[in-house]
Amino acid sequence: MDVVARVQRILLRPKEEWLKIKEETFPISELFTSYVLILAAIPAAAQFIGYGIIGYRVPFLGWHRLGIGTSLFRAVLAYVFSLVAVFVLGIVINALAPSFSSTQNSDNAMKLAVYSMTPAWVAGGLHVFYFLSPLVILGSLYGIYILYLGLMTPLMNTPKEKVASYLIVSFVIAVVVIAVLGVILNAIFTVGSVYRAF
Image 1 (cartoon, rainbow, N blue to C red):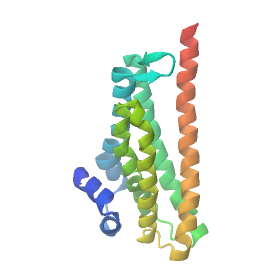
Image 2 (tube, helix red, strand yellow):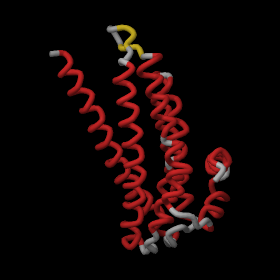
Image 3 (cartoon, helix red, strand yellow):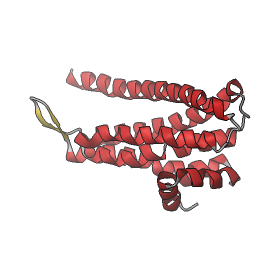
C-alpha cells in the first residue's frame, strides 16, 4: 500500500477513495502494519518533540520542558493508546451494525475506524508546537465527516436514513474511549510527577 497516496486521497477525495477501499480485500493485520503503525506514530513523535525537546509556555511559570525520558515514555503510551482506540472503535462500529439495520463485517468496520482517524493522526503533527495542539481537534472533526462518507459508501450496507444515527452513536462511543484513555495517560503522569516531588 502506498501510504502517502492513500492519505492524500482519503483527505482530498474521500468519497471516491471509499469506493476503492470497499473493494480492497487484504487482512486487517496488513492494514495495521502498513498504515496504522505508521500514521499513529506522527502525533506520538510530535508530542515527544513538543514536550521533551522544544517545550511549552506555562502561564505565570514560564517555559517548561519535560525530561527526555518522561516525554519519550509519554509518547510511547500515547502511541499505544492510539492503536487501542482505533481497534476499539472498529469493534464498536461492527458491534453496533445490527442496531442500525447494517451488515456486520469486521474488516469493513476496521477500515472505517482506521481511515476516519487519518486526519487526526496527520494533524497530530501540530503537537510539535504546543500552542498549535488545539488545531488537532479540527482534524478529528474532519475525520467524523470521512466516517460519515464511509458509512454512506456503504461499507456496512447501512440504510441511508440510519447513517446519521449510526455515525452519532459511533462518534459518542469513540469520544468516550479516547477520553478515558486520555484520562489514564494524564493520571499516569500526574501520579508520576507527585511521586517525584517527594
